[in-house]
Image (cartoon, rainbow over all chains, first blue to last red; front, side, top):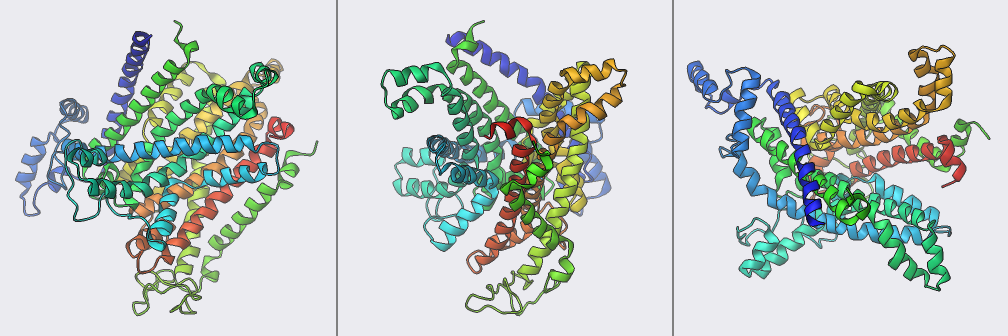
Length: 338
Length: 285
């Protein structure tokens, strides 16, 4: 079974490669029509025209566009995305330094979104055909209308500024050292045994993760609710009732398992969106991840860095979607028969 | 059964949403007569004032002032103009491009359907926020550029959803009957397929307006939206975020404005979906 799933996963990964190539080419073209000259930008303002020309040649900017793309692609495959004009460092290493922070945030948010989504979905289903249904329904639409951007600001206002319960800037409190082993701060601080830093990192993670989770849980709630409705039309639910099982046992032991499949697929798709949603939450909470790097790059028209970060976002989202497809296969035996 | 439009107008959701949207639209249209101050008029002696009802508030600035002493209420009202302009034009633009491609793709099928389908796939593998940021780098800032960027990112939403609906409608017998009666492809599309998909299209536009308001706020927040001299809710949030300790109120008002606008459009979309879609209206769920 594992072999079949791995084979299918491999096939999906291969299918993602052409998309990735087109995406990277598009990214390249969009950024090359910009009215900025990366060569002139990476030299001091006193540089002569000859120096700029030499730099253009060195950067391959005097070549035709397809040629430039191939040069860039060849570098990118070796992990060389060119030097950031603004930060004067390799774009690849900048991405590598910030990606773990964003991953940590995304995973924490996803865990929270799933818990809240399943809980909320069960509640929504539980109040069906009661006086609470319209209220719960309305609440879920209201929740659905608040994007992560607004949640982040609301939580910052309530818990950060007004109640002053939680920190809302950065990854740890200033003054605490940040060990660098894997880049996943919660893990690193535990490995080094710095529990004060671990606690601080955890506290800093709460608001951004909850903001993201709140924005992405309503969709999970609603899908779980409607798949539970579908499942309850099945004969085996009636059968379970005839066997005298309690309603909660039917719901949690029988219906939930069968309603989980569409919910997991949706949660997976949501995870892809959630990952790109980290961008704004990071900016609002000054969280030093990929999102802040992207915004810095964009503000400074830092072409090599924009390309590297933009491509990273696309790759991560594609990988997440592929893995979710694979997970779906593992969980749904009907699809495995070939 | 009453006409769907009347049914919609009797739905509480639609009425509440339309009321809210009319209020916001009114502010946007008559901003210059409602606003107590010029939104860019700076008053450097009274910066970061709290609202008039709070301690230290000034009656001439009902909702207080920002870090440059500009009237928050006036900026909110003018911000509504920016938000509504983007909402209307960006969603219509995305609708035109997305739906034309969807009709062509779903009605004709074959190679053209395949090509459009792959284009949508590639487009959607860019996270929307990332794509709009990158486009703004290329286009430069400004209201028209924001609209263009949203159109270029969000046409896929219309295309994908509408295409599958067109596919279903095209397979119906009455469409085949129309062709047998000698309708041209154009006539069939305009007189049979488009009217059948209109409810979905209206719902999608309403939802897209909500998305456009958020995207405009996001881009302005990051500093890549409208020009700095044009008031926008996203800019107000960015300014308030910097002075959040001195003046937390300033953060609250634009957030509330965005929330109300987005909720209104989503509520409208949800209400229209329930009442315009015959199947949903009959099942009552």
